[in-house]
Image (tube, rainbow, N blue to C red; front, side, top):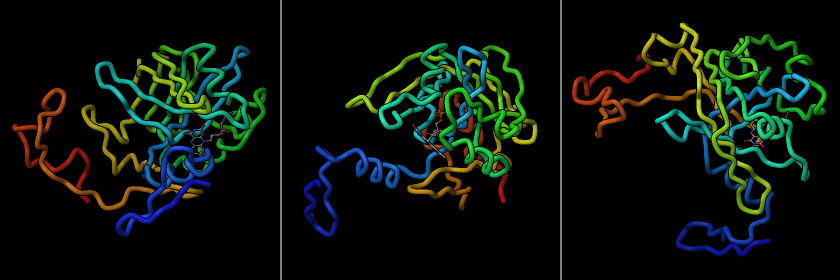
Length: 229
Ligand SMILES: Cc1cc2nc3c(=O)[nH]c(=O)nc-3n(C[C@H](O)[C@H](O)[C@H](O)COP(=O)(O)O)c2cc1C
C-alpha cells in the first residue's frame, strides 16, 4: 500500500511506489474521457486482428501521427503489439456509437490464431498503403506506419507511435474540409467499465493561430467545426 495523507482538503496519493493495479485505477479515472482507437493489424499468416485501445491520442501534425500504449497481459505481449512490432503497420478505426457494441466485443481475449473480425463477422475493406484492412462500419479509418516504439517505465507499457499515411473519411461525417463531431458520434472510455458519448458542446473563438491558420482571424466567430445543435 502507498502512503495516503490529507493535504488541505485533497486526498494526497504519492505516485512513487504505487502498485500497477492502483496506478491503473487512478490514471484511467483521472484521464477522461479517452477516445478509442479500434486497431486492426495482421499477423505473418495474414490473419486480421482487431482490438480497442483508449490509451491513445494524436501526437503530431507534421506529418500526422498517432500514439497508442499497449500493455502486457499477464506478462505476455498482446496480438496488436506483436503484429505492429513484426510488420510496422496498423489501422486506427474510430469507435462510434454505431459500432460501439462490436468494438467492445473485440476487447475480449481471443487466442492469437483466432481472428476477432472473423469470429464477430466484422466487414473489412482493403487499405491502400498498408496490409491491415479497415473496418467498414467505422466512419473514419487511418492507415498508419510505425515510426517509433517506446518502452515505458518498468516495461509493462509500450508506446507505438505511427504516422498516418492515409485517411479514409465517410462523407456522412466529412464535408471535404472538416469532420463533424456531432455526425461522427464518437464514444469515449471512462474509468472502470464505463463509456460516454458527446455531452454538451461549447464554442469559444480561437485565441491563437492554429497550424494553417484556419478558423483564426478570418472567421473568429464562426460556429465550431461541428454542426450547432
Ligand atoms: C474500450 C477499451 C479500451 C482499451 N484500451 C486499452 C489500452 O489502451 N491498452 C491496452 O493494452 N489494452 C486496452 N484494452 C484491452 C485490449 O483491448 C484487450 O487486452 C484486447 O484483448 C487486446 O487484444 P489483442 O491481444 O488482440 O491485441 C482496452 C479494452 C477496451 C474494451
